[in-house]
Image 1: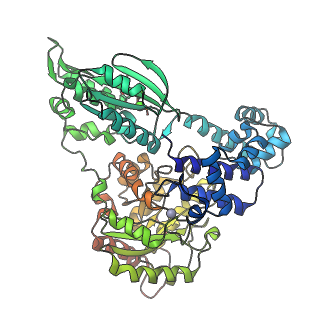
Image 2 (image 1 turned 45 degrees about the vertical axis):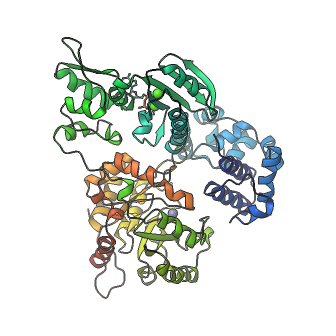
Length: 589
Ligand code: DGT
Ligand code: CA
Ligand code: CA
Ligand code: ZN
């Protein structure tokens, strides 16, 4: 079910997108984007609020508040409908191409009449686009790549959306008396960043009532196929959900089978075959007389194959089978291991909640420490000043007595195209901790981008590189850089790389985490929360960290505060020669 707040978020974002296409006022566009983000992070249902109460929410002015109430009373927003009419659906589709901005999409439409992704592809291939000012061969190649990204992402649903749907389904099915156990399997259980479909597994001796309950769920828009043990449906948000009902005695074998991955299962079945056994979703059987060996739990299945039980997040055939055979599986980092968040925002910049609201929520999670890292001054949209930052610091220091957490005052610096960051060394030294991220010029060529990230690592004051690839899942490709060179620099300088938990980032992604870990890099699993509710994003980051084989030792924010402070101090001492405020370490080759 789409929560009312999510519906409003989507409408406000669409409004901002459409304004951008029609060359709207940048401040107005930003106002709608900020409002969309604020509503997304708002902890309560906004559907019952009147205009005055809505206006008490940060970033919601009168005009936006009125549109929200208009939506809840009439089911539509008149101004949005007008914009929708003005801009053909095909042009709105064009805007979704990650490398094409709204402005250029509109130029394509007005100048060349291009009103769909297919027409754009034709125009590029026929060379028509190159004749147009501002669309050189390089831009055309970028666009083709963007179109490719858009087509690839079609149909794959982000982890967070799939998880929310799956959890809702499981709550409902678990309430059915005939259902003994129920859980999700497939790529979702493996915490993949996107999923093709959701696989739900239920144990029952009586599948009928479970299937009935499933097909009657309010979120089901269409029943694709219904059978005695397997039913597939599509939700209102176009997500396919497969339900399989298995006898309780087959639970373990079925769960193992439907969790996958396919590649992992193939390897496990090969091991079975070598032992004269055969593994299916019904159980592990002897080949000679078809007798059942085990099937009730996953642990038993793996144990009979002389393997330790393998956490689902590792089941990708990336070395986990050898590790399980030789007792070398990593002790994976968990949500409970995280001692504090090291990248968070407040309403001093683009966050939705105040400092004390964020602190109270963090305390509620039982953290031992917590860093506030609002945006630094070079990101001009955020209007940060030295005074505002210092004032926040004194407020934070004064709040120290009100909480059991150790409060760290940090900032999120901007890595400029040349690798420099905001502020001078003296001002930087005043923070307890500094995250540095790329927020501009994502399209730099590979060499320059690599140099940019390496130089940021070499800065003695940069402790964590935030969302290192800057990719946005299904929306923006990663920056082009020699990441092995970046990992080497991060490891050598004592710079942690972030695993950003925001579900549309998950950055670093799992494959790059694996590579970075081989270089000896340390990591920080942070939420980058811009609202109280976003502190809960941690689970997605931890899932991604697990897929990258990270242990608590690899993750600096599982460490006790003393060790974390030493990590920060050691870099500064090593790279800043005594008496010289800020000299860059020599470049490694
Ligand atoms: P997805 O849905 O594309 O994100 O990825 P999965 O891994 O959830 O794949 P899905 O939904 O097609 O199937 C769920 C699991 O069932 C899969 O991970 C392994 C198992 N499975 C399905 N079909 C096959 C198959 O033909 N061979 C093997 N070995 N396993 C299969
Ligand atoms: Ca699936
Ligand atoms: Ca499936
Ligand atoms: Zn941030």
